[in-house]
Amino acid sequence: MKVCLEYSSPLVFSSLSFGAGALAIVYGTYKDIRFKYWEGALVVGLSMCASSAMQAYALNHTLVAKTAFYAILDIPITAVIEFQSRYLDRGEIFGVICAVLGAFLLSWNGQSISPNIGDWYSIGACLPSSIYFVACDHYSTAESKTSLCMGQLLVTTIVCAVISPALEIPRLELDWVLLGGLVITGCLSCGVALFVLTWAQIYTTPTRTCIIGAPEPVFAAIVAYFVYGERLDSYVNVIGGLFLLLALLSPVLFVTEGKTVDKHTLDDMV
Image 1 (cartoon, helix red, strand yellow):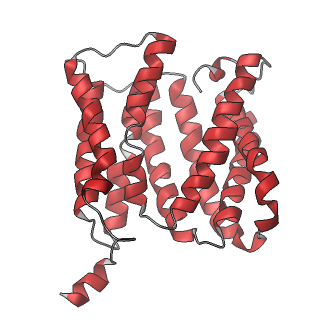
Image 2 (image 1 turned 135 degrees about the vertical axis):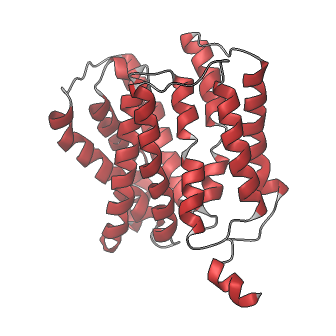
């Protein structure tokens, strides 16, 4: 994504990516789309739009690994939002702790962390990202998953295109690198990945969904090393990566059947 931003402004690229994602899944899903789910698609789409746009701006001003580190903050934020309606299980608590600790150690360079403007964009993206996971969980059903996925892709595509002239100088330089990036970030990351995520949200909780994505900074650090030559500073960073992988295993280490019991229901049972 950072490479593609050399050829396009952030909001233009976001619009193209989500538009490509919509095209990637429309052929096999258009028969299942129902417009009665527009409300959920609008809520989920707007939160996704805000989060992805801020992440795109962040990558223009900071390192890939640091962006991935701050993105981990959506895990504890999502857990706090969820805790308003239910208790977290042991696996979720363990996963949240491992993810936050791992992301901190992965980005540690022996000095205090002083966020720049790009880092603040990444931090700001965490709140709409958390709202996205919670809203997706609220609106996802076996019947609505296709409509919800296509709706959020279309909403994000349109909103990013509309607000681009007001918030930036729209820029687009056609290049094979950009087109290849749209295939990866659009068709795969936005289209296929969001469809799977929306479907999976029917069967698991938002916090667990965030935790499963915890190793993202590990893969971001690996890619950043090969593409940009960004190196880990010490063995402490490696330990942080191991904690993130451990967070990924938390749903397996602490198995819970289905979605966690509602907090008020649990109180009635005690």
